[in-house]
Structure formats: structure tokens, C-alpha cells
Image (tube, rainbow, N blue to C red; front, side, top):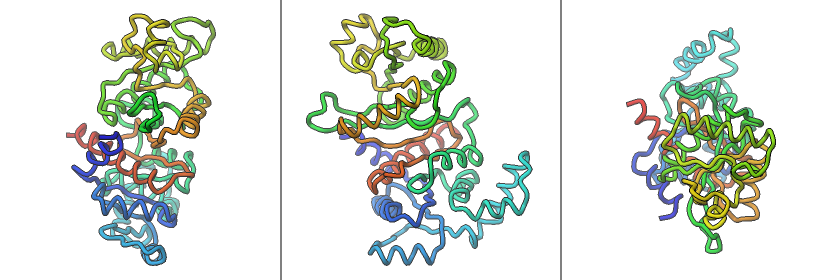
Length: 337
């Protein structure tokens, strides 16, 4: 079974309540109908019911069991308003400001997650990553154990000409611009947990650099090495290469020459990039030139799942992120229980 088929099946086994706030977008509507029809998730769209219904008719879509939540007239609004005022009371949010904020579907969707009316949210087909992440941080918040919210992509290699098949975690490719050693450590540990959950594999982490095992001396290499050593101190059971070039991280023959005795041994499934510049270029190169399928950017470190989309995403991309968000919700539910 391909990785995405495994993730869809896992989401279907226990469909979660996923809320989407960009209901004016055709891709969102098509993905919502498909995910609901396939029982991947219980879908709620936030927006004007009459406008959304008219779009369904215009597009020839059957909404089936897709729910529509009107942020202006829902019976849930008073409770969400009270929850929003409580959530932001330390920031001096007034009732008038909260009313205006709650009129925005992105805010309303995240408050539904915060208040337990939805299990997770997906946005970013229209909104920028900055807006999606900022709203999730403000309203859903970081997980109790998390010091940092970061992002990752699931990169799926499933074509016949791919020398290696399966899934890889790339992190951070969408959020933290220039992490220091401690932040890089946090990103790698979160990405390892994401690999365990979503790839259903034991994580094997490569801390990417232009150096392998000290072959180059530079402050940027030192940062990667420091982060790796912090990871080893916190998770001594985790297989990890310190500073390692991409070929040694992924190709066993190269690893045998450059890193004899490595626990990862050229079989890394978690690639940690030293900064956002490298990560963003890396995932897009793998996708556009290498033919990998990219799912994300997905967020890690939040108290409840809220995931981002690329504004260039397809309907299938949105469907895939809905499925992944559902699986993340299952982990979050298990952690609470």
C-alpha cells in the first residue's frame, strides 16, 4: 500500500471533524465534497450558507454530508465569542474587536478547534502562510510540551524511476527562517515524532549540511552539530547523523564510505534542513525536478492540528492534507486520553 493510501485508510478508520474556512475557493469545495463522500473526515465549511450553496449548484457538486457554519448567525457564535475574549483577555481584546475578528472565517474556524467544536482545521489555499500560522498560534496555541511551532512536508516517492520508494519528512521548509541550534533541535525532534506517526516507521534523522562528519569547518556546520548533540542528549534512542550531506543521508554506498558505523547508514527518512532557504529550495526541487509528491506545509507543535496549504495547491493536495490532519487529530486525542 502506498503511503498516501495508508494515511487515507487511517483517517477513514476514525473520521475526525475537520473545518475549512476558504469556502469561496472551488478547490476547497471539491476537496470537501470528496473527503466527505469518501468518509475521510466530517467536513464543516465556514461561510455564508446561501453563497456556498449557490457555488455547489454552479459547480455541479453534491455536498452530501458537508456541514456549513455561518460565522455571523450560528448558534455557536455566543460561546465562541466568550471563548475568544477569554483566550485573548491578556492582550486587551475588546468585545467590539472580538466581534469583528469572529466575522472572519479563518478566526472562526480556529476558534471552533480551540473550543472543541472541530478537531482540526485546514487553510492556506487563499490565506498566506503568515496569516494561517499566526491565527493558529493566537487561538489554538502551542502544545504544552512544545517550545516552537515549525512545519514539515511529507515527500512521497512512488514513481517507477524513483531510486527509493516511500515517504520522507522534510523540515523545516515553510516557517522558521534561521533557527539557532536549540530551535533546530526542537524542529528535528518534532519531525521525528511526525515521521513515527505519519510514515509509520522508526525515524532515522539526517541533520543536513554541506559537511559530513566534520569535513568542513564553519559556524553553520557547528550549529548543525550542536543541534544534533542536543538531540542525542534528549533522545539517546534516536538514530541520527550529525552534519551530513544529502548523498550520505540517502545513499547507503555513499554513507558506507563517508560515515562508517552510522546508525542511519544512508537510510534517512527525516531530513532536517539548516534553514528555511535550504528547506524551501530542497522540497521544491524534489517536487518539480524529482517528481516527488509534496503534502504540506504541515504544522507541528500546536496543541491541536491546524495545517497550512500552498496557495498553488490542487484539489488533490487539499484532500491529502485533510486526511493527514485527521490522522494528527487521532494522535492528539490519544495524547489527551
